[in-house]
Length: 64
Image 1: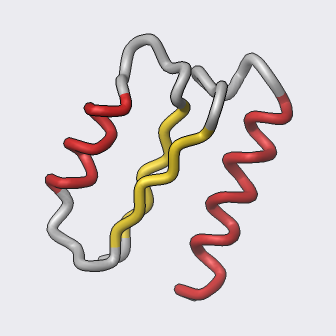
Image 2: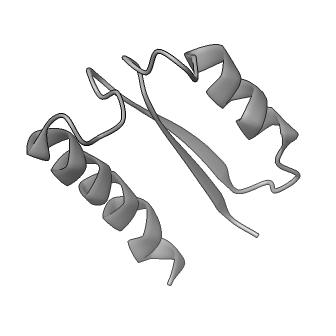
């Protein structure tokens, strides 16, 4: 099963190392970690939300 982990690099509760650990724990061969610069919870900026949606869209398109 393909898996995408999206992480904001300004998150103060889940760190980049946590996101990498989550990715490493996923058993799929098709897995991606995408770090989004400056994003925290994605509610502090519409630009961060748009960026997250664009990442998900670009990742999903070749898989569906």
